[in-house]
Image 1: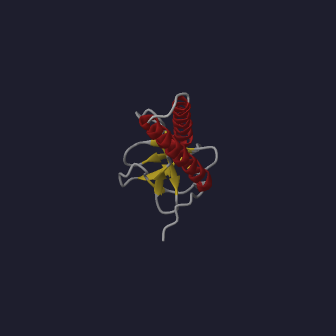
Image 2 (image 1 turned 90 degrees about the vertical axis):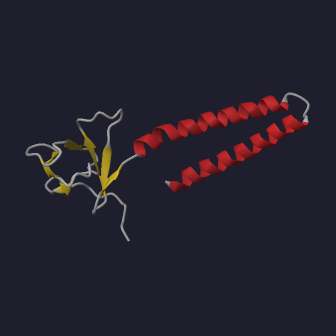
Image 3 (image 1 turned 30 degrees about the horizontal axis):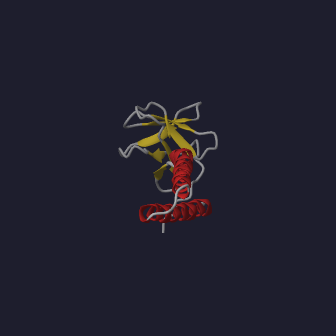
Length: 136
């Protein structure tokens, strides 16, 4: 079974290219960077030594990879750590707002359905938030 735990990047070792082009990235002398012998991309080792980052990119965000010992894994932690909690807070706030609007008037059958839907949604959001917290 493969381990997906990240390993520290050795600045003196050769690695396969993370761009999946059968090239090898080799250390560039006197720098903390690697260059691919096939696609001519340059990669910089991040401060912690576990992540490499592609320098010249046309993506709106920087592409980063982690070395598992056998292969590179695309690092998506920056995207999930910045947008997922924000999305959860906004969604939770909207559900609470709808729930407050539903409680201001006498309940009819439609409003009762809205209340039930809001309660179920809030409960699911709480379960989702506990699940996210337990993953780390």
